[in-house]
Amino acid sequence: MTLKILSGGAANGLVNACTADFTTATGHDISGDYGAVGAMRDRITGGEPVDLVILTRKIIDDLAHAGMVRPDSVTDLGNVVTGVGVREGSEVPDVSTAYGLRAALAGASSLYVPDTQRATAGIHVAGVIARLGLEAEMADRLRTFPNGQTAMATMVADAQDGAIGCTQVTEILNTPGVVYAGDLPEAFALSTVYTAAVAQDAEQPEAASTLIRLLSDPGAADLRRRVGFT
Image (cartoon, rainbow, N blue to C red):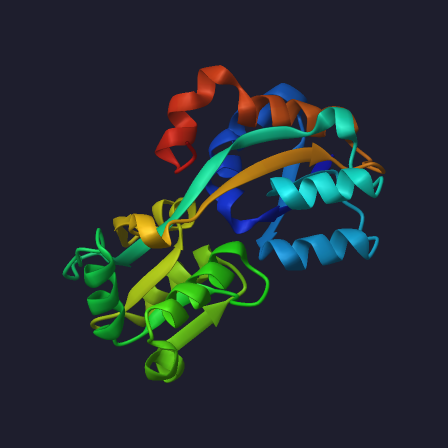
């Protein structure tokens, strides 16, 4: 049997880290699809079959209100911040201040980000660029992808000197070949709560509940921190 997940990209690393324990406990495999939270929400509201949903707390609350996920299964997994990453071996910029962040972005050969219309981090990064007055300057250097992990993996594969990635820390830490430069500075910070829930019409509701317990287990707090959840 296979458990089907639709999730924001931020939870990919955490699910991967718990997959072996889940399979041992249930005998199920996992089929996970990770992308922009807006795109995942639209697939769920469009009637796509799914067992487990992991999206932002607000979207999960909206889905619960609409009767699309089981309210008694709703479980917060933790907060995820947005930050900056560079390819391993590249100079790591100081992005701890607004001045440093602006200098890093302005000097980047390309900026790799998730979907700026439907992904939590991508929408936020687009707003940060506008607030820094770099919107026009960076328009031809902005590279967008369905989720942050795809953006980071492509940045590594492209091996372009001076490239920078900006997405949620979980997607940076979960991508080999990327070094975490740091959180966005306080004035531009974004921390997002990610939440899991069993789909109302789940074919594997018990297995979905088991995975939620593994993902949220207090004993797995160190694991969650390692993959970027706080």
